[in-house]
Length: 436
Ligand code: GUN
Ligand code: ZN
Image 1 (cartoon, rainbow, N blue to C red):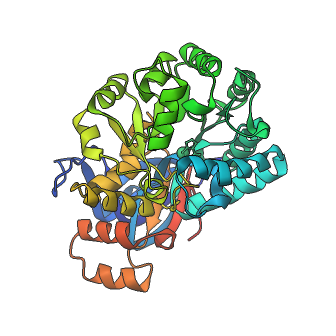
Image 2: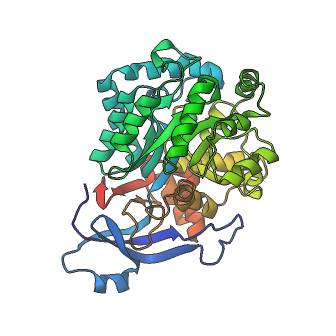
């Protein structure tokens, strides 16, 4: 569902071309910044980006001009690890991972046996995502195939680029969530046939984590992946000490947690491992060699008390990082909120996150981690017109702070520390605008 109208959006334009590095000054040529810039959108794609003065003279006569002066136009944010079915249990008090799963998460996910419930939550989740300026996500549904149909249908209606999958689990959870022993693969294959590659949708195989899948199920999942290397895979890894001890008990023949996934051929370039907090450098190198990515989920890690993710050790190992919300354990659906939490975690490790690196990560960095950089994450001509219009003066506090900010990087940093959904003036998806 692409809008065939043409638009010329005027505003301050910022887009990354490459990783700006960790320093205070971004690496040369790593970003494009037009203080009085413009984007030309045609047929749902960015057809030109540059200075407003130059673009306005070249714009087709029928282009609708939209004035976003005073606002910041950036590629839509990307959330590479999030559970849509957990929207309604965000902020459930006082537990660590395994108790939180049993007390809140599994009972909540049981509700998704009902298609109507899944439809309603999928719509509410996408509304929230768009309000937060997030235009693409990699999403855990539940173990019910219905929940995936509901999510993809809602995403398709909105023309969104989304990755999602049916949770695979056949043990250690309530009966209503379990696949038959070793099963769930037929359902996954049906969903792949129906949704993978359709419009802007991709399928991600989704074994929940090692403790809730039998060896047979993990083995069958690896088999599907081997035969279809363009599929994605998402799971959890080394989030919590209790979880890690449990995995060691369940898989005594594997040298560590990662070795379980390696054994079943689940570690590849399109695999996202959420958390990866408690890893040694050997595990980081093994992940890096396979081109996988770790989704850093800072607000979730703080909420569940899971630990502090060592971002720089991962970078030193050459490991791809993505930055994610992981709601319901995450407390922020907003990418700006994830940046704030990432900065705070970084401060506790003596590795503060610069605004350059943070906004790169939310956009092009996350797109690259998901191999989507040819489609989204930046404003190169030809890319899909998903973007967020940020208002650096959205709240009285932001307005005061922005008035004191001389440079772009100061304004970006104020947005990442003080901003949330209120700072999202509008979100564009596939060349169409929501809000604003
Ligand atoms: N590990 C296994 N399942 C989950 C989940 O739903 N959320 C988080 N944060 N970790 C998990
Ligand atoms: Zn998760």
